[in-house]
Each structure stands twice: as C-alpha cells, then as structure tokens.
Length: 82
Image (cartoon, rainbow, N blue to C red):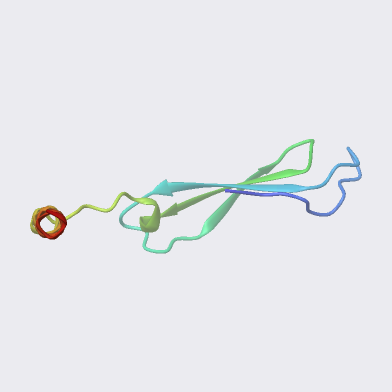
C-alpha cells in the first residue's frame, strides 16, 4: 500500500511517500507496522506482518453450497424462461 502526496521533501522538492508492505503471519493477529528505512527521496518504508494478509481458506461445504445454489437458481430461472 502506498500513501502519496505527503509534505514536501526538502532534499528533492517532491512530496513524501509512505510504502507499507503487508506480509502473512497467521500468528501475529492484527500485528503492527515496523519502520524499515527512509530513502534519499523521502520515501518511508514499513513492513507489517499480520494474519489479515493471509489467504482465507474456504470450507469445502460452503463451496459446495454456493455451487449447488448457483445451479439451482439458474436451473429454476431457465425453466421460467422456457
């Protein structure tokens, strides 16, 4: 995630920028940002390990139910149109 258009950087006369990289860590919960560096262009770089960046595992039963309801709905709809 990048935030742009911050205050003017006196080194470059351009605006400051914040760059946050989110990393999956299922044990961190919300976690916290960790400052890594400020470069010569006034870019502030952070890393944030959080469980919220991890992919969500779908329960196979929920996937089955979604597929079943999808086909049931469109099958019913096609019968109404015929």
